[in-house]
Image (cartoon, rainbow, N blue to C red):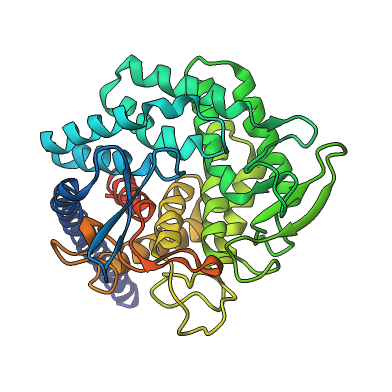
Length: 397
């Protein structure tokens, strides 16, 4: 009798878990479908506002004005990247045509060597275009872009120099630069020179050594001595203080080392990504909805501004990290990513149709210390939000 009761209890528990799982799956299927349909509507509206030779960046609500930047701005690849993600899910030919037009506008960036951002500019755009169309022209542009990015590699420090020398920094390398390694790794994987992968690995190793604190949070900027390779100082440009964890910087690091594990299968990159994830997700200042303040040590918490872009990047990275992680940690990473997507899809962060300049998400923070892009939509927030939705759909539904 006792065994029968235990068996029935076990069956009931398993059925309840299955019911919860089925309900969650249905919820996420509907949410993802709705988000992409909404994105399609918003970006078709944005198309009517976008200037012909600049790329959308943000929106000024007070002036009801779309903010667009020149093509050498580091975010120029995100607009066509967003369009390709939308086209992939909706099949809307109008969206595809606009994506192709935008690619033509930024194509000359393949020869740009003014900073480290070629990966953002050319892989998020042409990389998605090639993935979906297999047009060899796009592949060749990515290869040329990798060649341009590699000119900023500095053998003396075994890193890609992020910005040019200035009165503030001699040879700055920023944590964001981890993201641009993806294009180099992909180029080598697709038949390009092995030197690009070697550069990416060297950069990742140097960054792992010098950018991170014992608790796995990262500095924003490490300034190097080009002659000796020594670290001159560790600082910030967009965080609250040199010693504080700038939220988007932590997301860049998480995404970057997860991606480097994908290409190299080097366990130290996986362990680094897992530890960065735990730093972010277990931080006492992370709000319950998992949308971080612009800096984990920002002044005026809990009234400090949030950064939806950091949340979107984190969610996308966590979903990939979940592919390489098992057990309790995997569940934690995937479930917290799901919560982030649900939060970003709510009225608290998602715009209303026809508002927000056509952008999907509200409440991102670009560079708070410079009083730049505070509590506004940002193009890369939309990009990584859609990427995360696609990843959840592909891997967890």
